[in-house]
Image (cartoon, rainbow, N blue to C red; front, side, top):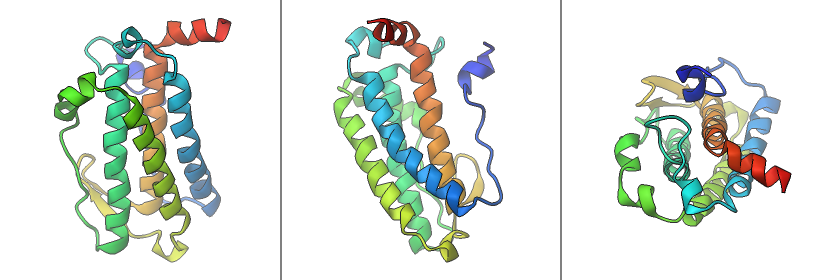
Length: 182
């Protein structure tokens, strides 16, 4: 694999101009399913496994779990901002600096796994109840420096969830194979 294939193992996120109601509902269902996949993947990991990386210089499995918990709170808040404000400037922080904080480097992952599950449930509930007439609402995504519609935002969150799950799978390749064999 090339560095870019390891960095973007499922490809880069690409926004579509239009998402059907079925695609939106599928994305919402995937949000719920993938939070459970995080738990399944990490349930039997040792401290050594949590310290593994998917490429040299990348975040550890532990840092990825905490990163997803942190940033998906932002994703959720951005959706709520877009529903209550006109094209708000979405909440954002320095993800590399956050991942270097002691909680990201050393805290147990169980609380972050619960955060991911709970945030995804709330996110899914809110998104399942957005009237189609509101789908064109937007927020400004400060990292990507673009305006994002609500369906694009939902799709981006699903992409982000899958993207980092794949990073963990790459880092844990030998652990996954061992668990499948046993």
